[in-house]
Structures are given as C-alpha cells and as structure tokens.
Amino acid sequence: MPDETLDLPLIHRVLDSHKEVPGALLPILHAIQHGLGYVPDAAVPEIAHALNLSLAEVRGVISFYHDFRTSPPARHTLRLCRAESCQSRGAEALAAQLREQLGLDDHGTSADGALSLRPVYCLGACACSPALELDGQVHARLTPERLRALVQGCMTEAGA
Image (tube, rainbow, N blue to C red; front, side, top):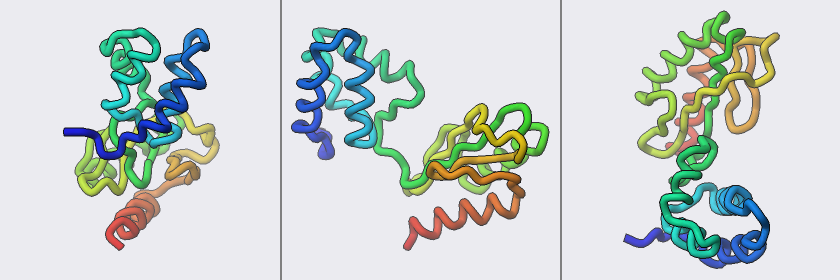
C-alpha cells in the first residue's frame, strides 16, 4: 500500500540539495524528518538510489539512531528524565505511573496517537528533580498529581 503522506517534491528537494555533500545520509534523513515529521519507509528507496547505497544501509542508519522516526509522531511527546538525580527523587515511580495510566511501555505511543512516552537521561533540571519535558517545555519538581494532570490535559485535548 503506498504511503499517502509521502511528499516526493520535498524529498527530491532535500536529495538535490544534499546528495553531493560527503556524508550526506544523516543530513538528508534529518531534513526529511524535519519536513515531514518522520522518515517514511517509502522514502528509503529514493534516498538509497540518490546516494548509491543499498536499502539495508539506509534502513540500518535510520534504525541505529533513536531520534529518527519511521512513523508520524504523536501529537504530544513526554520525555521523563531517568538520570540519577531524578531517580533519587522518584522518577521510577512516576515512570510506573505513566506506564499504567497510558498502558504503554517506555517507548510507546498511545493508540489514538495523542502521546508518546520516551525516557531520557538528563534534561539539565537536576536541581529541580524529578523532571520531564512535554512538547519541549520542562516541568520540574513533579508530583504524581501534577504528572496525572499533565497527561490528562494531553489526552483531553486529543479527544476534543
């Protein structure tokens, strides 16, 4: 089944502007993800052809780097810090609460696409542990109640 979100003009612009640069694969993948929100599987053959690489080489790089997505991102991304300072202040209990509240594992996305959960290992808010980042905004000194309210806000917005 063809990928209906595949934006060939964007992909070809990215390829044309980067393919002659040594080590172009990573900048190409970043540019496509920036433009589309992810790297669609249907873009892989285009990239491989433009760079004279195998499909396996391109897919290998995409799968190696955890920041590349191969499906559209959730509307909200919650990144819970799991580093030492946050762990000592209850991050593991908050992670368990999230897994239960959302029914997800640490790298999951809710079935409705509203929220994805990602562990990180330092947000630079150690003095205010435990901390999380929701859509790029850091929330510190989290309590179970504040976390529940943040998640509920994302889920309510998604249902509206």
